[in-house]
Image 1 (tube, rainbow, N blue to C red):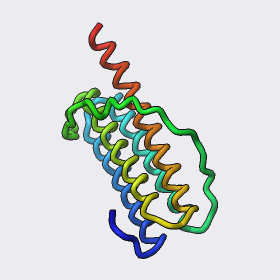
Image 2 (image 1 turned 45 degrees about the vertical axis):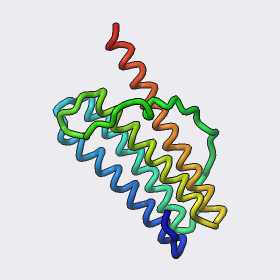
Image 3 (image 1 turned 60 degrees about the vertical axis):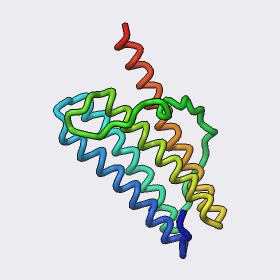
Length: 152
């Protein structure tokens, strides 16, 4: 992980990552012809925008409520083959892409937390890591449910 020159620099980086994730999900939602998948992808985009808003709030010097417990990791994302995101991908593939992206976001925030000295910013990044873990868990559960139904 790179060395940051300032708290604003690391916050700007994280804001950029959340913005890119939201745009990715929004673009994919607009390109898909499956209405249900578009709705799911738009939901992902909204969640990423919420993370960006928290980061912007902290950058502006305002308080953000942090909290949450450690999230169980089903590790499903560790055992599925990565797929390339495309407008024509299946719902199963969309869930895999989402799991992998949320896993990467969790790792990013964990690494960012380790790279800063500010306790306030470290706590923010660890809280965001837990939010990403929650998202990943939700997608893992949905994936498991989807696969179970597909096998019946």
